[in-house]
Amino acid sequence: MDGGVLSVLVTIGSIAVFTLLMNLWLLKAVRQLKRELNELKRAAGTARSEPEPKATFSASLDRVERETAATPARAIPQADRYRYVGALAEQGLDAGKIASALQMAQAEVEQLLQLARLKQNVAGRR
Image 1 (cartoon, rainbow, N blue to C red):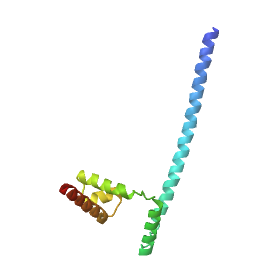
Image 2 (image 1 turned 135 degrees about the vertical axis):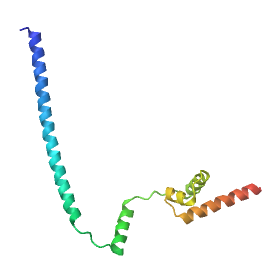
Image 3 (image 1 turned 120 degrees about the vertical axis):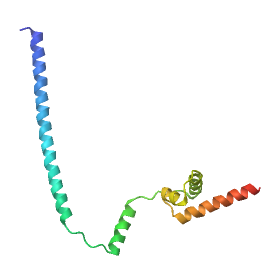
Image 4 (image 1 turned 90 degrees about the vertical axis):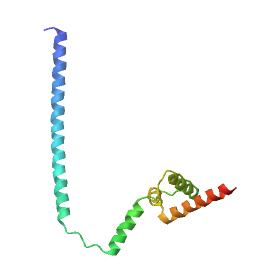
């Protein structure tokens, strides 16, 4: 055989062996992942079968306090709140939707909307 043909056959054989080894490794990894998934499913199934404790007010309050503490508050500077409320109102959103979007109390949004209307009235009289 020619030296060039032999090197091509060796290269092809090497690629085939490498591909076979990669497929075997992949198969092993998939089997391991399936085993771990089944273990997690079993663990989740046993956790669900345990009866949930009866909710009490203090337990609910504690849970809400933990969740509130875990989510960082996005503080909106006071001057920006006024502009944001006005801009959202101009787009047609009502006080409830604005309050929800800006994470503000609806009463506060309504007050800011009233202030914006007063400002427009005063500006219109000048």
